Amino acid sequence: MKLRKLAVGILIGALVLALGSCSMAVYHITNVTELQEMNNDLAGDYILDNDIDAVETKTWNGGLGFDPIGTWGGIAFTGSFDGQGHKITGLFINRPATNWVALFGYTDGAPFLKNVIFENCNITGQRYAAALAGWNDDDTDVIDCSVSGNVHVEKDIGGGLIGKQDGGKVTNCHSTAGVTGWVALGGLIGILMDGVELSSCSATGDVLAFAFGGAGGAKVGGLIGEFGDSIVSDSYATGNVTAIEGPAPWWIGGFSGLAHNSIVTNCHAEGDVVTIADRAGGLLGNVRIDSQITECSARGNVSGEDYIGGLTGENNKSEIIDCFAFGNVVAIQDFVGGLTGLNYDSIVLRCCAAGNTTGRNYVGGLIGYHAEATREAQVSESHSLGSVQGNDYVGGLIGYNGADTSDCFSKSSTNGADLVGGFVGLNTAGDLISNSYSTGAVTGTGANVGGLIGQNIGTVSNSFWDTETSGQAASAGGTGLTTEEMKTKSTFTDAGWDFDTIWKIWELPVYEPSYPWLQADGRCQCWDSQPHPKQVLEPDNLLCEQRKNPTDVRDPFPEFSARHQGFKD
Figure: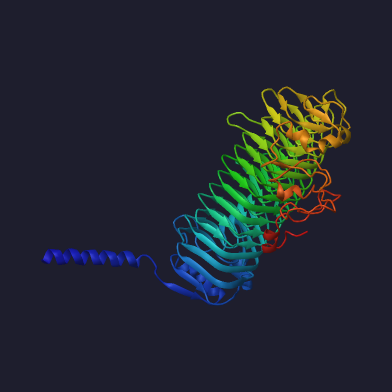
């Protein structure tokens, strides 16, 4: 009996010691001094009871400012923080030679940071710099937080709100802060990894990257610099993204520079993307490794060196579905597309691009270079509008076609030297173009210039071009028709086109005749609708009136725009 009592006593004592080593205290913060005193208990739970004026931190520590709570090396913040919707105004940190610079420098397993507003912050750090957290490690949830002000990163990994986020959820967080630095920069977050679920977030500040700073390449985006193994939804960025110097590789995007092995749904970017290097896109610079991009858009101009696209610079082993890009795309060199510059081992389904696309070689109104090697690639139910300008391998829809393409059309005008087509510049051996058409004007100076196809080594089936509007009587593939024939439904039904689930066409006597259009393309079909005054259209089809300028359109996402200001006509 005595031994049992002794054993129980030892167990209870050990438990008390263990609990004593971990804080279970709840602290209420009412001023900036108490905010700094969070460093005294890195496992505590903290609550803001009121707004905090932190302007005086500019004079602290000999001009270094606030001392971040927690850092790398066994002294991480592991507690929780609830701002209860209060503001922290004027937080100042100037530590350009220090890593993990933010209110919370480094957290490890902290359950949540939430409900706080950073107003007019000024943060400078060497790496992992942001307003709220330099690095959230191990599944911290960040909820209902926002930031305004400026964040500068001397080297790499920084964002307006979070430098790096590993695991956890980021929900309803927003940034208007300007972000500057070198590598892995985002208007809201620098890097997302390890299963993060991000939703209902935004960034509206500009992001500026000065130069490439490491072997891993630069990743710069309007919302997120880079994300992998994550789910990102219902979010947007509206700031301009600029990378001004440095050698390749760059990955620059209006929303994110690089996305891999991730799902992106209903996300949008509005703003210009400018770089002197490669792989830049209006939404994403580079998409790779089994990612899926669905119901996303980019509206802005994109310029760079090569692998440049209105939506993505490069789409590699991934899928782009129900997306559009809207703006001008300009590249100094090759692989340039109104939607994506390179589509490799990837799927593009029900997408479109509108704007002017200019480059050197492999230039297309939708895709510059479309090919497959280790898995099936496919482009279907997609179209392009605007103009395409290049030298060789220039197409209204695709410059170089090295995989199957079906049920698509292009109304882009096309101008180049050789291998120029109203639909495809070059269709390679073994690849099929089917049930497609083009109507844009085609001009070229070389031997391989055609109304539909510049040069064809593959197969072209049941596809057509308008000989009157294209100015071309010949093509390396397809059938040339008059405008009247191109606006006659039987032309296409006789060729086996599907007008039940894929195509529609306006016909007399109820409608003014039109070219065929894609039923599933409602999000961007409004750029080309031609409603007749006497026609009675179904509400889903009456999308918008015809515009003379293809870049002057009604918002295809009115519900999204109503929720998020910045997406307006």
